[in-house]
Length: 68
Image (cartoon, rainbow, N blue to C red; front, side):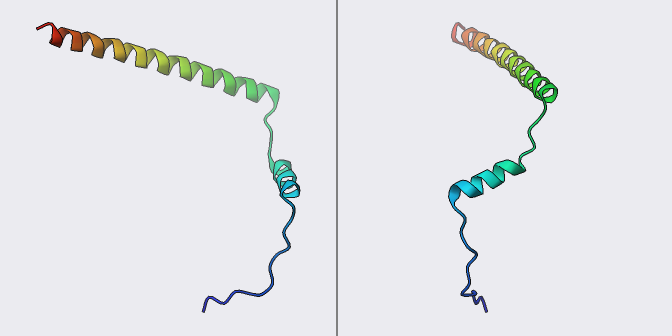
């Protein structure tokens, strides 16, 4: 039960393994990369505006409660 074989797989060097893994990556083309970059920037700006708006509303509410 749970016996391990005495044979081990031969270890590749770190850099050879890394090079093999980089070969498996499917890099996006320029058009896809540009579209995804624009989407990331747009979502970041929209979320930043939403957070800023919520911050202003909460700050106004807190200031209102403090001045009562």
